[in-house]
Image (tube, rainbow, N blue to C red; front, top):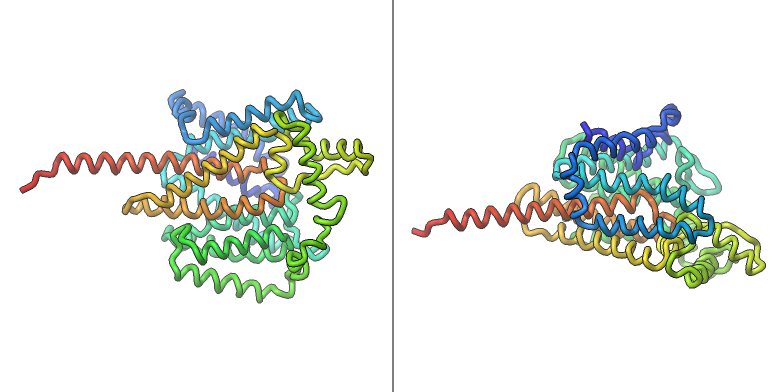
Length: 416
């Protein structure tokens, strides 16, 4: 029961059906499930699961990152803003991470979560295309949660994981859903006009074609190639090609030359970092800190986002927070790569290796698109951190099982 509720909670947090179905919004499904699911999960462990939880890969590091955020509250540019964000918003990420590790304790459950991811990608992409509309040459989907840049980031984080249901036989319905989600996601990313999105999509395309990540056979690679270009030519008249072409003339882009462009924001961020190296300016306080800094410099006190997840984290949490955040990223990549290269010939082992490769692939693309957006605290970073901890635990159990089997075989083997 608790795992089923967790899956529903994950779908609400990641797929956000409440943005599409307005009738759900008065029910506050995210808030209600956040109150119910962690409580139920922690009660079901009877204490034993919690003690093992803190021994799992990356848990202490992630909680320490959160603790550093808390320590920065007294030094924040606005203590109430930092406090509210840390305890009313980001606490959901922490709870989701811990419950994920408690509930996803088998490959079967891991595949179920992958299906939730696939379903979320389908919801965003298919219904996004059906319900969205163009504005100033860019495509906006339903709801107010994500702008075109954000939706490209979300889809690029989810799309690679859908490939699992294409390359593994888990039923016709799941395969059709995955193919529909991949195709609709590619189209929607094209239409968003997000330059970070197109960089991420091309990177994903090249990694699928020229690497062995995800253990994708050439048949599927060629199919992906055909789908990619077919969809591009079908929707070419609706794609803002001129916007994408500005990437070849980056020196004249407003982000380079304009006072309010990204380069100026990042230069001001460097000054904020040097002035607050240990504690940072406080979680969720970057726009305010930038506005005050501009005022001190006798410039228009414009409050702007960091437009870079890594600059956002180092500016708001300080050097210690950034080191922990970077360590979480590095350890997650290491975990995915380790699982992808497991030495096993079992069916479950092959599935786990594919999942490891796809998560490695997806996380690389996620990290690239996050470079251009203020998504350092997003649920998708937390999702990949949780996946890495679970995969590491499952792979250790599998390796230990294989070791025991080999030892038992050696003991029972009697040479003639």
